[in-house]
Amino acid sequence: MNVRPTELPGLLIIEPRVFSEARGWFTETWSAVRYAEHGIPSAFVQDNVSYSIPGVLRGLHYQLPSGQGKLITVLEGEVYDVAVDLRQDSPTFAKWVGVTLSSDNHRQVWVPDGFAHGFFAREPSIVTYKVDAPYDPRSERAVLWSDEELGVEWPGGDAVLLSDKDARAPRLRDIPRDLLPRMRSR
Image (cartoon, rainbow, N blue to C red; front, side, top):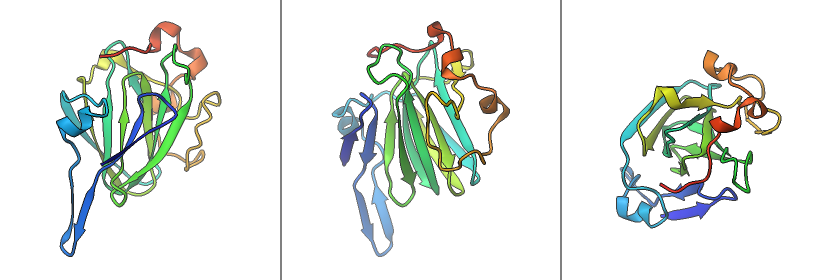
């Protein structure tokens, strides 16, 4: 397993070992011991799966006050996955990282609590994510996917399929400071 830190502290790109042979392939998508060596918690409480048609953009979502870390994996298809550092006291506040995740490259992304997360489906895609805290509808928050201040370079341009909630999300400058996370350790 190769774990690459990004320029955003805590955000990791994981490249699991893939064992290919004539019948197909095998990979380990989670190991409490190995992932803990890289600071990824071993206590996940929920697994989620979403299916998206090409052109769907989901995000940018986060939870506050009950934050949530996510380990993202693509089971089928390809997405452009984005994480934005929303920790208001972080030296990388409002910076983002994007990475292609696919069923071919087997990459994963660890998105810690304090980051907004979203993805754009380049093709029909099944995405799974393990979370370290339960979904809390009262803590559900979002930042507008196209916020100019963030400047995320989505591959779909403006031609994306959004939920009503994501289309109406506020820009970062319009989110009260008490609704933005701070750096902390769990």
